[in-house]
Length: 226
Image (tube, rainbow, N blue to C red):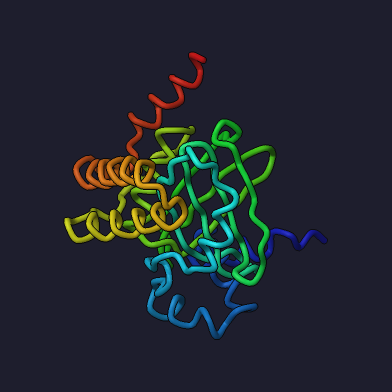
């Protein structure tokens, strides 16, 4: 008897999507850390500034002339804390806050990306080089700007019925992402350029909403033309 799909079938019966199922599986392993996420319906750590350990872990994987665009913090099922860091060239993924392994995905190798709203925040998934990576419990406003930046580079599915961003959300995203850019690349010229780009991305997300179907289609058409 094939039992591989049993957890998914149970989740569907209970009205949970894939991201919600991941949250419950993660809870079985990291229950004490996830109580607030599952009970309150939000990740209290999803909108934090990067820790110094995050900066130390990621800094050596970024070239001096790369631009840091943003990041999301969440959970990785059965692993722990997840950090996705986006630059203008690559996506860096850390899937365990006690380890040092960083996965590199060149943006040109990402064939699909999606972002869906669940009961415990936003779940992001990417497919690259035959692998699928996902992180759940991401902050809505950090995820909104992160996903818009990603959508300008790779093929992304549109987000339906997303959370709207207000002025406070935009200000927080700009502060968090600019803080990450400054600490990861403490070069004045690069950082000033990155901050301006981050501010524009955040304002676009507030004014135009999350990545829309028409924008996602334009990215795919542009890719097909090359």
